[in-house]
Image (cartoon, rainbow, N blue to C red; front, top):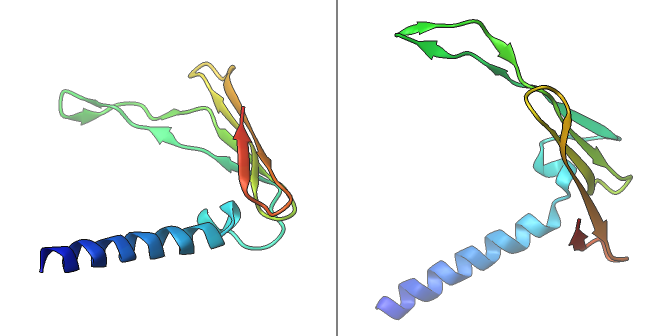
Length: 101
């Protein structure tokens, strides 16, 4: 009986990973259509002594997609707005991620 549940869980996990691979990065973000750049902006509201402080905008995160919907670049910024990290993704001819640098 234990082996049955282990096999069932493994089949479920394999099915989830296979369906996740079928989606593009654009679809994983819930976006449709020709999107080139996604700008993620957030605001931090600190809690000080049980009261909300002044809201502070955090630097945006920029994500760039290619025409096939693959994420090709992601920029992360320091709190002062300067660039902290830029990640570049490379894909093979079949659309599989082969390298991030």
